[in-house]
Image 1 (cartoon, one colour):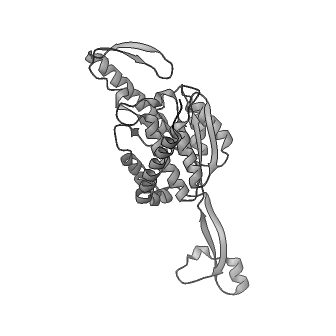
Image 2 (cartoon, helix red, strand yellow):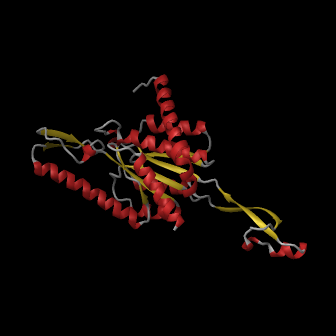
Image 3 (cartoon, rainbow, N blue to C red):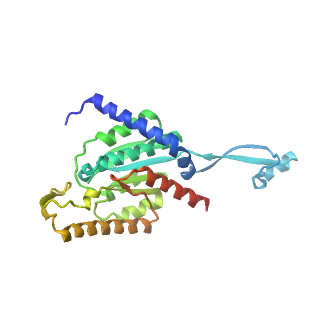
Length: 295
């Protein structure tokens, strides 16, 4: 499919303006406070001043100088942020305004701009049933705009979803601890083992993306439903209340099972829906982490 480069640039620019405005007005301070750097760097030794922390006194220097001196440290602020984005065929579905993939790209853009505002590196991994694209972590606005372009317009080869393969690949190429945002509808075969390994190595945040049309069928008679990833088709009588209820219950149980798995591995969860403003769950996530760090 041929796309007009001017239209692509316009959409990217609009998304940049919107997400940067949200970052600057809402998330900048919270991002800094809830995602800490890897530790503290020694900066200097200086003479003690009233009000300094006594535990910071360097007793060796103090003994040599016959006056109290303290060690001064600064936070090592720089982090690596990885965006793992599901671009499988099921992401093109959307029964409201945005598709699941468009919603995922917009949320990922906010996270990317939050990271570069704090001088962090951001990388991107797009996956289907294979790893489609890996862009190593870097800093800067131009780098982030490239990530946005790929998230919106990359055309994958695969159609299915292999979360385990994506996590295993990331664990191989990202050796140091990173903050990892995994954005997907999580319609995938079992990925428990890879999730367990990743949650131990990295600060992992899962962001399940849903659409109400996946669980709530309208009463429109007999329709043919097709699995976007496998192509399998089935005729469904949507006028049958029991059928509609069974689909709803099946999807609810799938999400409950996913939540139990993620929580058992101490993975934070941010629920995203194409039917709801994503700012609410994002703010709730940051607020929750702030409270947990303050406890």
